Image (cartoon, rainbow, N blue to C red):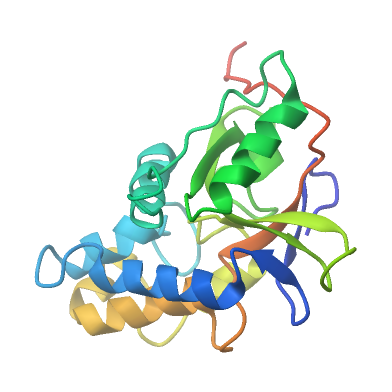
Length: 237
């Protein structure tokens, strides 16, 4: 991952250290998945769509919605400690001002269990395979930061750990979604699942299968905290 993208991304690996700690993050994420939406409410598709930006089918011929901002708001809220102040929306990372101070403020919130929504151009914060990428560079995407971290522990390369709900984002996210339960059209296959199935799928995508790691939708972002984000471009500008 990375290549021509301004923010290089990578998957979490054993030995990486985060603040908050991995065990704490996994527990917070797991509890939020179990309880959001509230058990016994809504449909299975609504439960999956609460967390995941889903494809229309496992051929990834399109996406069911473009609601990354609304989804970032709701998942960021349930992944944040209300007692610590809840979800944090940082100052515009593309605007003039002290960009390093903005990232320091973000880190401070992450360290007290507050998630942070980050909005930027799709080709800046999205995945390399995302169906939302446009040839003209237009459009934006929203990810949810969860922690700061360093590769291989203290002294390693710093990163931000983020949840990107876009299932189309990378080869690995597409593979994790495509199972016997989901192969085919999403609107047909998902309603046949149980709510327990949905929770299992969401946890696989976010938490993975290893007890001390994360799934493919939670990735490391190596941010240059001294440089502002590029401005979002809109088609036709």
